[in-house]
Image (cartoon, rainbow, N blue to C red; front, side):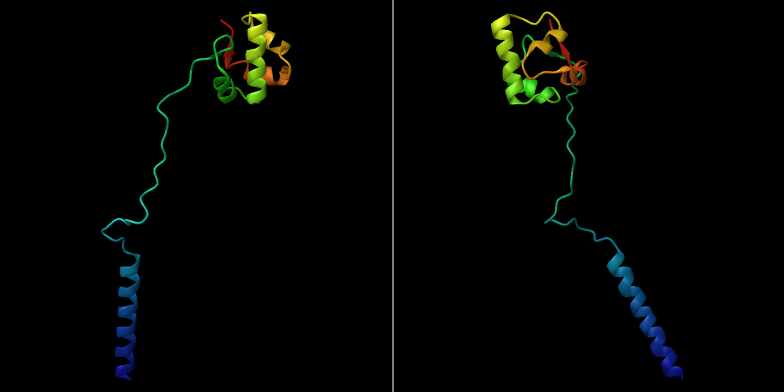
Length: 111
């Protein structure tokens, strides 16, 4: 009877130590997997996009619903009709409707 208690005690002790050691954090970093770091851009975009000076890539990148074709259409309109007098004149560009203008109204200006 004593030996069964002794064996149970030793088994419990070894099990506890095994679980404790496997759950303890290791002292060295995992060299194979570097820690994940999220880069945050320090550049905060507070300026509006000027319809009269922006290039195709800027228009495409900064305006919602404006891809390469619509950005080129904006540039083509500007080249053929002169600078935009107001933001609302953007409605004259083929492919730009009221919904796109309303989505981007706060992001654009015509200087």
